[in-house]
Length: 364
Ligand SMILES: Nc1ncnc2c1ncn2[C@@H]1O[C@H](COP(=O)(O)OP(=O)(O)OP(=O)(O)O)[C@@H](O)[C@H]1O
Image (cartoon, rainbow, N blue to C red; front, top):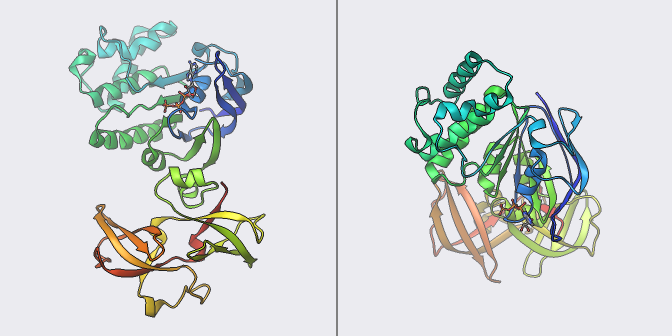
């Protein structure tokens, strides 16, 4: 199996759009990496430079240690799946899956038949080989597209929003299925999506893209819990953001004056008093308390990080409940707690608090 390395890869399209601006990543053999970001940030362009459908303006690409920067797609040994499946409508499912192996001229008919049968087993659709694509559902067609991409044993699998056209339930089912298949054969995979939940649940690592750059690359829990930038915090999940000015830094913690409230947060290197910063608190990090009983956080013994307000909104999310709390100063906080623990309702007054260790200072 093989890794993929991008070094300083940029892409400027004819006409002038600089779609990718010097991205670097080393994807390990067998790793599942997701490129995630808003529409137009350069995800598809990055993937297409790996596949060889676009040539980078700058930088280099290696697959399995070999420099493929200028190699055409068919010399790169990658399998690609697109959002619209792109199955050949006039061919049977068997012919679709066999296509890449037939085209290579390297396999006997017996080898191809055996491999097609193996691929149909892998995607759990044995026995559909004689049908045509229009005789399969959307989810089944997408499995066949995956089987077709994997049949010639590519070094890497490249997936461009492959689940985007499926309805929510099927999409969730296919997320699990795709990950199962990827892990079963251990193939290096680059997956493009603008769906943050998909990125967080499926990947070994994700690269959050913004305006042609990688803002942060890391495992899902790290990128979610420890965002480097405000963009990453905002793009992945919900973030409570406190903008303010640092008044003190001691013992690795910063005190941030946000006007209506003071927040004490774990600091980060280079943060000095006087700096304008943003503090991010994930909704699950707040705990409910009572104003009189709290009297402050456990870590600081002060009233920092205790916020009082009225619950203006409550909704059930399944295993958890989301609350909106509005403070006197009009600040709205989003709080998520496990179901069953929360007897509070809209209209009630409440306090929430957060441990400074659960607060993150991010860059703009
Ligand atoms: N063939 C092209 N010629 C010129 N500009 C292009 C071309 N393809 C994409 N672009 C531009 O490059 C930028 C990045 O596009 P890209 O498709 O890579 O983004 P994306 O993150 O995949 O977006 P989406 O999620 O909408 O597919 C956009 O500004 C887009 O308009």
